[in-house]
Image 1 (tube, rainbow, N blue to C red):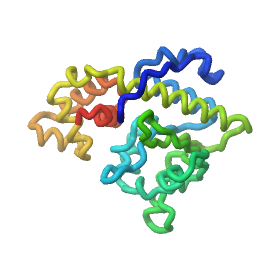
Image 2 (tube, rainbow, N blue to C red):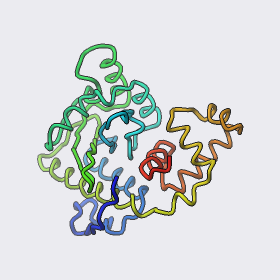
Image 3 (tube, rainbow, N blue to C red):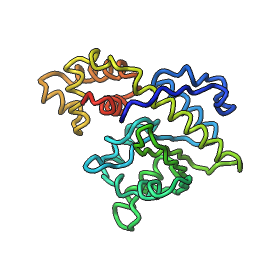
Length: 248
């Protein structure tokens, strides 16, 4: 992603329920994560995610995921299905600038079959009965999908434009964080980068420990320290941040 131009996000542009957040002062991915949690709950949803759309060989869900509150089990389970690039979400969001509303099959392929059923089963298990997705573009034009999911649809007619406005504002805040940590690469150790790189390749902590000749406990400590330096709250977000900054 090209570094975005310096654009100020003014607090008085924020939705009422985020009005005290002072969006122009947001500096870290963690702060954006907390605001997205507040936004998600305000509109009655339970889950959110921001993901890049598939691009060439970069089609794996875990590789394209930027930020979310999905539990690790959900991210891992959906990633293992390998269905993201063929999902209705990708197909429909990429073709319209209008909001995309879907049911538990939004993350599944359009074609019926075992793959479709597996994706629907994961959505059912985690309460993703209804999803609302928006197409957003970074400063350089790269397409992203922001998705809010839960058990119930939006409750009020004016919720849709308010949620879209909030999504655009928070995406702008997140994009600004991409250029506010240019020294992270210098702070990450070689071992931390190695652990992140192997994790991005799909290796477990035990496998990474064997590859690097260290204990699984030490691998875990490297992940924790790398996540802290990257301003991430878990391993998946640390990997996404490192990839976005071209560290791995």
